[in-house]
Image 1 (cartoon, helix red, strand yellow):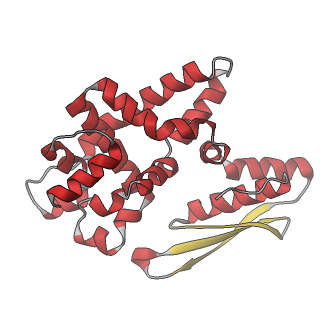
Image 2 (cartoon, helix red, strand yellow):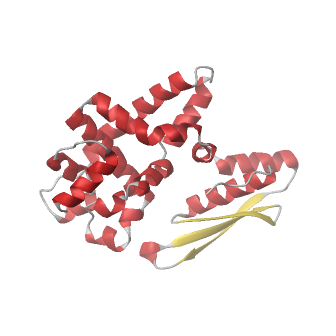
Length: 232
């Protein structure tokens, strides 16, 4: 990765992380495994997770003074979720900057939610180390603050499979089941799920994992049964 690439990423982040720490934050364990002696970003990710959690928790506490603890916890879970962090990472084109091992690179690891989310946390940690807690907090809130009121994003923190199960029981819609099919090669497999209520299809979803596809299908069905169109 060249200096110009570093500069563009830092410009999007709006912080000044030193080159060595930035490179560390962008180094996935798969790359480190193939290059003995090269450290990975997992320690920075560990730190960044706490930086993220504290910043979001504090902001929620002050922004929503009348919300009970349970609702605050749900909002926090949605905003700091893997799904939300991956969306933020894609927004700054982070995937192209991550150092990956050959296997992860071949399987498009730079676009996997888990890797993108972990690297975002590592960048938060790197900012804390390089620039201090206040700038790290500002960075986190610059990215996450708009999500705190976003109803579609907030849905990421909900257990849609449990909610559709409870809704089906309450309305007498019958047993909930899922039909799942996988497509594509093993390293880039996509699953498509259909949720059935009493044998009738009510929602479809897709994702790189069966559970993710089922969860999306359950969310689509739940929103449809409540007359809510899912956002995009």
